[in-house]
Length: 258
Image 1 (tube, helix red, strand yellow):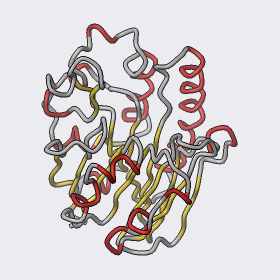
Image 2 (cartoon, rainbow, N blue to C red; image 1 turned 180 degrees about the vertical axis):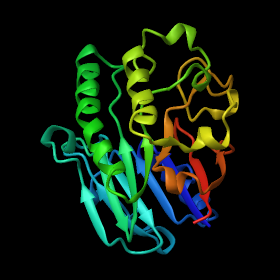
Image 3 (tube, rainbow, N blue to C red; image 1 turned 180 degrees about the horizontal axis):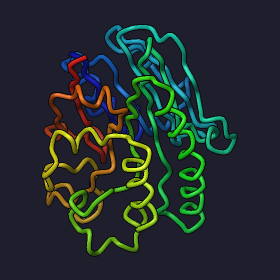
């Protein structure tokens, strides 16, 4: 079995203080993809760099206290690819690919556009350039699992207040259409939805810090494991860990018969 976890930490140091690594040590995960490190290499303790014997790989943002992604793995990677090859995207630390034989595990943090129209424009620009990158990945013949915060709720079932969010970043028609194209035109698989096609309220992975959203479960599903069809077909179970609160996101866990 292969266990892959995706977790947006909203600050690796903050999540550490909230018990993330104590929980992680109980999971026996083969791969753990992290997003929103909000830290540089010098900020990370030995326990964050290589927790419980896991190998740690990171792609930090140039701006301090911002973005950044990481991957933990049980085995050393054969190859690490930091960034997509675009200077503006890579400066924000949004993409890290680790290769193990024919398997690629990717930690992804797509931008949010909720803070301003300017950032929404940046988000669309990243999506436009990421699309051909996705096409190249799926045509490579490799098994690929892309874990991360995509900052898009794909369908109405993926957020509580879908009616009131149709003009808000994360649920805009153009964003949702783009994700549909990723699945339907390129052939990527939304692994969680394969295993749980009909869930609504239990599918959320992020809640606003406003208005008791988490207590009321007014959430969004914006964290995904999106995979090539071969490895996606081997997914056997999934869960979202909500018993403890490490950040404004909850870890997404998927087990594969691999």
